Image (cartoon, rainbow, N blue to C red; front, top):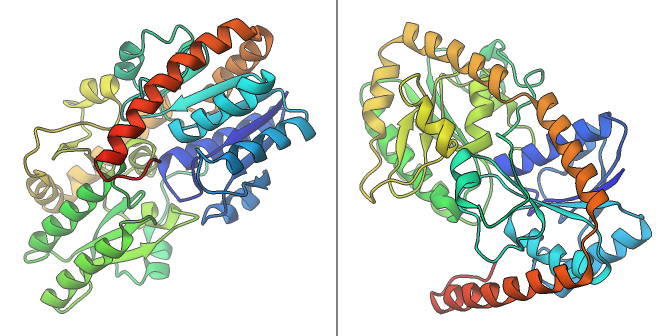
Length: 389
């Protein structure tokens, strides 16, 4: 098969890294894969994986230019299937290449919530049992837990990674890799982590390592500078975009984050704490695993403060517990998040989508409903002073 994979951007976030790992795994199974995305920090990762890339002329996934570029690529490259990640690219393709020429499309929304306006006749892949249960209107939906390449992401000696980042063997390193954005309340979790590590650093040699780019990076750097100035040492290290986040995971004693990002940390045999929206903060343990198996490695709190400090203090005080929890984390990833198993499932989804071919009437009815829902969503978003995409 000839498959175009559309990423919503090329920042080093969990969704994007999952998309690249799966694209490489599908390519290695004998299929032709072409990425379509705007330039960004992950281009080095794309080249390292040996994946083909066509650059989008516009970074706005709902722009005519972005959709027209994808349509031209689908025609000239003779694509069989287009796979879109997140809602922006999914809408851009469904009203573009899929709606106009009927090319089969598969959509992935790995975490958060699935927007009501996504077309319901298309294959939809979600990353948690909760999302699968919530999307009953999508009759062709599939559950795929975020996959992890457990060969590339594996326990290793932390000393080389620490040296490369300017960290000492004595530091208690708490790593957080993700996108610095308000989407899914990620920036709020990062700001909270800075505040809690600020307090932890009064009694422990703690360093918070933050990796990732995005529109909130300026605000996060400013918060980090204030903490570092107060302590007279580097308590918060903000690296910016990390095309290869492996040193951040390898150097860590504890990992923070959500979704695929926190799973990668677990693959390195690190204890993990999930930071979600509205103050959600839970360690990944045997006790909490049932909840994470249902909702994915994300959650929504009650709007209160993030209760991160007690979890950090517990792990800081007990190296043996960090080791035990890290070994268990690695076993969870190996058992439930195999990249090979995910690639087999995805290959089957692509094949079924290609063989199904929706008629014009089915496409038109589903897309008309989506257009009405999308219009309402964008209107409310703009009235709230937020960008459309």
